[in-house]
Image (tube, rainbow, N blue to C red; front, top):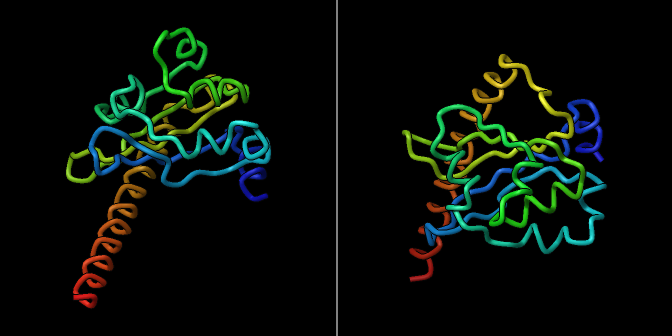
Length: 160
């Protein structure tokens, strides 16, 4: 699988892009890489399909930050209140979660999670580059969402 080869080269477990849901209270997985290890985890389907609260202490922190946010998974596991995805990736031996806000015009509408098995894997320069890539990802996702909205409106017009 391509994502397995990428994950071995870049030494990450997963990259996941999550977006706010229309209820403005929850977020869900939009796009992610799937390694064999992750796909064969017994709770994969459950975790991938869940809606998570925006204000979970992780997602909202990432959305509010202008810089990448690095979380230590061990520290996250020590929290009494934590989203299920922390337990899931901790079980896959992930050591750090690095988050980047997905935003357009200074308005956050999602987050990119990079789950890393090695602590302090990224240099400050690599984090800057990843932040720049996430800016382009934000634009691309915004364009896709706008296109989908237009397609939906056109379908409504044709139905009427």
